[in-house]
Length: 155
Image (cartoon, rainbow, N blue to C red; front, top):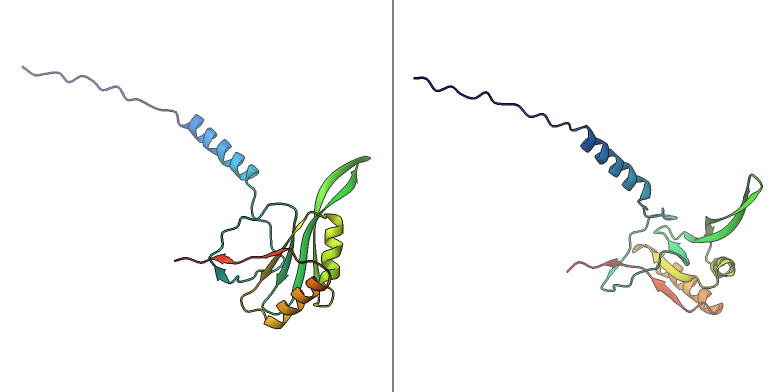
């Protein structure tokens, strides 16, 4: 006697709803992700052991490149008129300055936001003389509170 095999019923799972949800999540994360803001110039930072977190806003960046160029970068609040309605927004300002006008540019940026923190980002190959001139200029104008940014040293 032969045993009859039961006929197997195939199961089909509709993947359309899962794909829709995956695309919706992908679009959501792409739309809400905040990327690192672009730098005035890319610099190669020296390494150190410090671990201080910088705030996301109210920061004035002073960037010194390896070619001894100096940039002052800050965000200021501006009011623009869109279709007859005044809208508050933030505008990023990047100014290239020389070593004689650094403190003037910093004071102009601090006038826009007095509680802003000064942050110096200097390339590891920048000339010592330029950094000395920047810091001397800052001291002469009573700008004595600032941070120098470095990379975290890996042990």
